[in-house]
Image 1 (cartoon, one colour):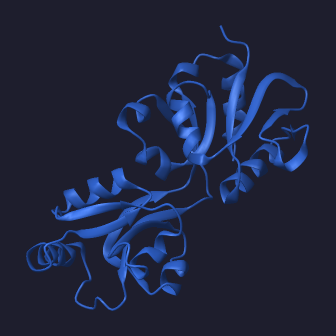
Image 2 (image 1 turned 120 degrees about the vertical axis):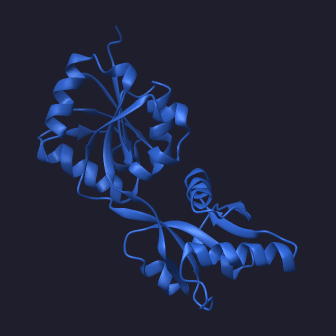
Length: 229
């Protein structure tokens, strides 16, 4: 039986802010020896819990391999992970923040393209006339591929996005993108438009547990407490 419970909390952004609020509301006092920037922490007066501040994507990976027992991340990142990782994780609770959609967005000037079916035509045109594939920049290759295939769009090439995905079509790095957005403002500001049926996935912040940790009693109590709101 292992004695230390490892809990993963996102190290930055809106997810981190929301999760810290939940701990605070439930009077769980998170402490870090070196303050704000510390990547390790604990809960005041509870000895065998270790808090790790990690990238939200890494939290999902580590819940999958069992090196985290409990973690908080986005539903989008869970669904993007490999199936064998998803099988090892249970979503215990979805929260009312961190809400965003993964969408397909295209350049505004493409007036003839309104739906995914129109995109399929464009993709074939690219292949036949330009002898190249339509490039889709994304940080979500698995979800993007799955969605496009399910809609009958097969003639495309995924481009891995390393930075601001919305800039890719305007730097000649891709024709279209898929990206996570909560308001669509950044897309609009970059002259991109979401396809009418281009919503791939709805996401929000979730509490997730590694299936290998289901039997830990202290963890059960903690989960109950953190599920309250």
